[in-house]
Image 1 (cartoon, helix red, strand yellow):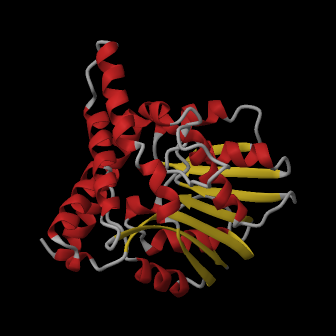
Image 2 (cartoon, helix red, strand yellow; image 1 turned 135 degrees about the vertical axis):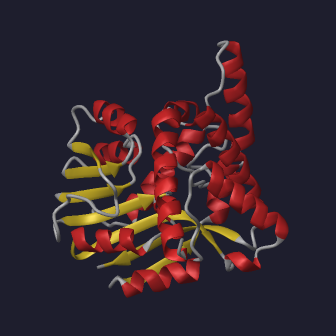
Length: 290
């Protein structure tokens, strides 16, 4: 079997595992966020509450949307890997002139997410963000919060975002990236990284400098990189407490932990361990323009 064939096979296996993971474990995110925000948060002193996780998670939504500079004008927003639509609902509550479409491969997220979007000008489609039915040159803005990592920050996702955006449309990505090349990670960092990818069905994390080159190669300009690691860290520190609370809750309810739930918990733990290797991993908000 050739190397190319192996890579394609591994990509397909990862895709299947990722779909199974989110179909089965999404409901567990209710314990992480009442608003079903399936990402980390953004801490601002005196604005967000260190003890109330959703204030930080919703502030991440706010920070991503603020960089789109949509204001209150009529606009069309695409969310690549939207989960249960937490960010979409946040955006539609803030901007009454906004219309939003989200895409996810999880049937559970589509069904339940669209129920939560009842009464809003938003809809979630069961589609691959690498190849959507969204019309070309139609969208004013696109976002991807901790979703492109599932396909290894592949250029196909960037190409698709570029295709659907209008000229001067903006793409904002909030995600974890490597600060070093994978081969140069220390043993501890490499182990945490591989376990993180395994348990959260991530193809890989791209090196941040490589990511900039990929975006420019697809035609994006004015690429701005913001290291938000220290802003995100307080919400990451919630991970061990969330894990313990979730396990105790399940035991109290006399329920067993599903395989996907265990993967989610382990992935969260290794996300914390990876985050401690500050010289190797970082959390970035990337803003770029078509």
